[in-house]
Length: 337
Image (cartoon, rainbow, N blue to C red; front, side):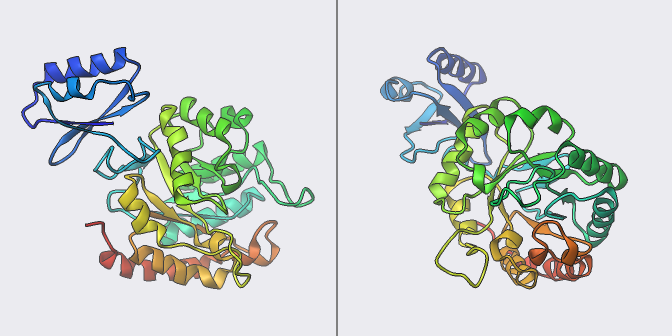
């Protein structure tokens, strides 16, 4: 439910209303926009006397949200959410690029890639320390050692780091991680979502499951937000279809669709979506033109010898060339009207 406040609402009366809502186990979220101020109500509002609320002198109108996702809903918060990733802003007009290898392999590798992507214009560094793999025989990542290597690359370059959390047991190891990624396989691991919602306020990069609908993605974001963490970014990484020419099928329509449905930033991952390095650039250009809030790109200094996903990884030279083209497109990017 959304309570729309009058423009001249008395602050003391608004405070009293907020207290009244809390007494009824309703969590109020105040969103002060350019044109109006809203109170988004999360909780069991079915038994609330809407007429009583509507009659208050500070209330302009009361609206019920029909969609099952509330906190992530654009109606709940008309203004775009801007997520602060240790100084790098995602949402609200900027389009930062996150870049780095699929998996952390060594200090030399990570520092080399980090310096290359930073020089080319990347503002965050990605790298997997814990790797969920389809085969139990594939490289599973370096674990804690990989996190230590990521932090070394962060010290060398100053780039905030993005890496995947697979188990809540590992959360204490992520104290110095800037952005926690929840991978596609864990998008509906609801216990994990509730824990990262309640145990941390770090930005969460939530990847869409390979067979998930957008409503399912938004409901997963809702789990995190309803548990107390509003800093969620939605990531499209391709969905599974009957097409075999690419690793997955990238769905760039999620950008305008999600921006209509939700206020959360939309991030595009063309590397996992396509599975081939030569397809990353055109898809990244398309995502930029369609108004993506950020990109996440796999870059490896020697893709042919990568321990994970080398085929879809750009070289530093490819990445630098692509970044120049993205800069030329940014001024013409689509913006929600």
